[in-house]
Structure formats: structure tokens, C-alpha cells
Image (tube, rainbow over all chains, first blue to last red; front, side, top):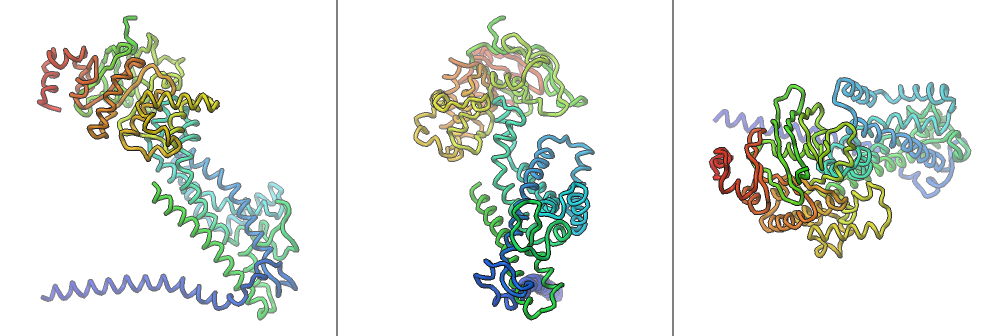
Length: 285
Length: 254
């Protein structure tokens, strides 16, 4: 009887502990969302997202950093997408399974865990100084791209591995070369899930501050960047500036929380698009 | 030349330098415009043998091939041979239907597009004639732009046959093409194979002895990487010369 009682107690305790931890995780998200919404909701108006900042950023909106963030995403993906996919193709289709390949894979996994501030300093030293791109949209976009590449490679490799060997066999048996097989059969089959991986990656890149603060994001810019060598404002850096450099906190506070809500909506929105696209494609397969 | 379209001379093959031979000293002739069946228990090397005939085993790293495989008298393992050109001459149909995730039309046109054919009316002609030869045209003529995976398993396999013959091969290799199909679909494929030998030379691997007896002109029996005997199908099935062949076809093992 005692054992039965003890088993029952252990079972209840475990259930309670699991529920408790789940509640804590959810509460973190819920509480931060509630806090940010209560602080920033009042700032969200149509003017807020369509007008540039005014009066030392104590008035006006945030359209300049919104556009700047979108431009940064575009530059980073234009760089990271091809490099990531082609690297994944090399690993999955060409590289022999040897020590060198394993070392290279390890190097890429390690790149994924490099802190973003380190990448930011690397971007400053390499893109801004060494390649003379200066502090610019281009340098910042490339640095963000470096952050996205390892994740993209992993996503693309998984997608390529999931292309059935049958397709490759059928293509080779029809007299296709390796590149024809990759270009005409393997890539088109894998592309939907590669794109999904890319979208999830964009969501992450959009929220990064450290890689862009030395390389291209600025405190204030009177207009949009019209060339890749211009500097840009960006949402995450704008938040950082508002939170640390302002003296009129009563005026910049609401703008800061409003900006946070917009950035959250942007990154969550992008990630949700990726997740929905992925589940949609899983259903189709 | 002795009328053999495809011929192997003392063909031996191992999957790596130190591995034991998967095929040992196989010499066999496949006559032009005939169907030759390769039978034997699982793991006897019949599929491996088939994949030597269009060099699909090349992808296995370190594979070792000895002896010769002659197509129209010339060795397909000679150093100057272009493997992609060889595979266009020696087409292949696989065990499981493996259409590409494209439309029916794109599947059939694939091989021609690899060759750089861009002319749409020419491609349409080839798609129609190939699907007709594979006995599928009437069933799919109104839905050529639908995805190939929307077809039934048997239709998919006939689509794969159409795709293979769209590049005008001379030889068709079929690796257990009906093992994933139901009896009705199997009957359609068998009928098709008998039709195809008018234009092509067919080598077919099958685990189904009745199938070999129904569709082939000649049969070769493999056992543990060796060719036990080969000859006209009627002879193999009525008066096998080797006791092991008799044991196998009477169902004593395998």
C-alpha cells in the first residue's frame, strides 16, 4: 500500500513540477509582452510609423529606422542567402565525408555561437576599415549576413538532405551531370524549406543590435539611405539610443516602448510567416 | 558481333578495394530487341549487375569493376566514355516509381531539356509520343500540367518509363519495376514491356519468377554474386541444367 501511495505522490509531484516550469516559461513571455504593451501602446499611431523622428527624437515617429531595418535585412539576405545555400550544396553534394569536411562543419557550427558583438567588431575591422566600405548600410548588412550564414547553412543542409536519393538517381539515369541534377531537381525540391529557414533567420537578424552599432547604424539620420554606402537608422539601435542617451525620459520613454512593440511585431511577424509557411509545406508533402 | 546488343565479359565487381566481390566473373549476352530477365534470391547481385550496365555504381566511392561491359561491341568502362551519353543510351527504371516533384509534362520533358531542347512544339511531340509508348497518353492527355505525384503508383511507374524513353535510349534497364505495384498495375507494365522490346532491348531484374516466365525471352539466374545459368526462358524454366536453378524455380529456397 505504501509503495502505491509513494508512486502516486511521485507522479503528482512530477506533474506539478512540469506544469510549474511550463508556467514560468510562458509567464516570462506574457509578462514582458504585457509590460511592453502597457508602456508602449499609447505611442502607436499611424503617424508614429509613417513619420520621421523630430525635435531630438522627443517627437515624431520612427519611419526612418523602420525603413533602415528593412534595408539592412535586404542587404544581409542578398549576401547570406546565396553564400549559405551554395555552401550547403558543397557540403551535402560535393564534399567527401572526410576529416577535412568534418573540420569545416565544426568551424561553421562554431561560427554560429560567436557572440554577435564579436561579429560586430569583426565587421568594423574587416568591412569598414580593411575593405574600405566605411560605416555604411553595406558594411552593416554584410555583418548581419555573417551572423545569418551559419543558421542558413544548417537550414539549407537539412533541406537538401531531405530530398530523396530517388530523385537524384532518376536524374543521373537520364544522363544528367551532377550540376544539372542539383540545379534542376535537387534545388527546386529543397527550395521551399530553404526559404522557410531563411525567413526564420531574417526574424533573428532583424532584432540584432551589436553587429550594426559599429558598422552602419547611426544615432540619427535626416532621411533614408539612398545608396548602400549611406548610413542608416535601425529599430534595435534606435531603441538602444533612446534607452541610454536621452535626457528627456518622459518624452522619449513612450517612443522607446512604441519602437520596441514595432520591432517585436516585425520579428514575431517574420518568424510566424516562416512557421506558417513551414507547416503549410509539411502538409503538402 | 553475334547479335548481342549488350554483353558482359568476365564482369566482376566489388564495392571497395577490400570488400569481397559482389559479382564474380559474369559473362552474359542480351540479344537486341529482346527481353532478358535476371532472377535470383535477395542479395544475389542481380540489381548490382543491372547498375553496372549504365554505370550507376560509379557513385559508390571506391567501387572496383573488372572485366568488360560491351554495348554494340564497345566497352562502356573505357576511359574515353562519356558517362552521361552512355546513360542516355542505356535508360533505367527503378524499383519504386520516382517521378520528380514536377508536372507530368515536365517529368517527361526533363531528359530532352538536359540536352538543351527548348523548342516547345518539339518537346510537346516528344512528350506525347513517349507517353503513348508507355501506354499513359490517353489517361493523362488532359492533365499534363498536374503534379506527377497525383497519379496512382502504376501510372507513376509508366510515367517513369515514358521519361526514360523520351531520350530515345537503345537499352532499357528495369530494376524490379513492379515490386511496389498491385497486380493490375503489374499486368499493365508487363504488357508494356512486351511492347517495348520492338523498339528497345530490355534487361529486367525481377524477384517474381512467374513474371520472368511471362515476359522474357531469355533468363539469367544469379546466386551469391555468381551467374548460375543463362539461356532461353523456356529452357531455364522447363529443363534447367543446374540443380541450384531447379531448386530455386521450384521454390525450395529464395
